[in-house]
Image 1 (cartoon, rainbow, N blue to C red):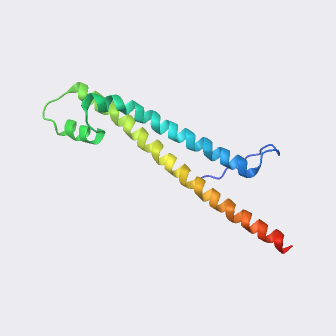
Image 2: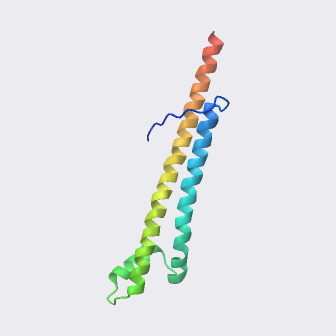
Image 3: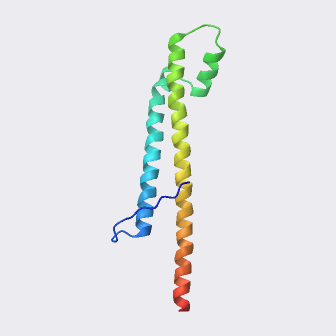
Length: 117
């Protein structure tokens, strides 16, 4: 992960800004993953088979079917993009949990320090 420092208006709290950023990133990555998933649906309906099975079928076929190969190339691009954005979503989702855990520890430490004073 990359650390980025942003200046935000004073009326926006750090936790609020962090939460909003993660909500935005989760939404964007999930939206892109689902977009590519939707582009795969017509191929699944057309061939009534999963991408991986279709790829095996086309690659092992003795007969050349140019339309099927064209569909395979396009479907594979959507499949790979869907996998990539799904992985990005999972990373963002896991980091969101980590940040919340860190914030809860910081909050607990701050309260503890204030109580000692």
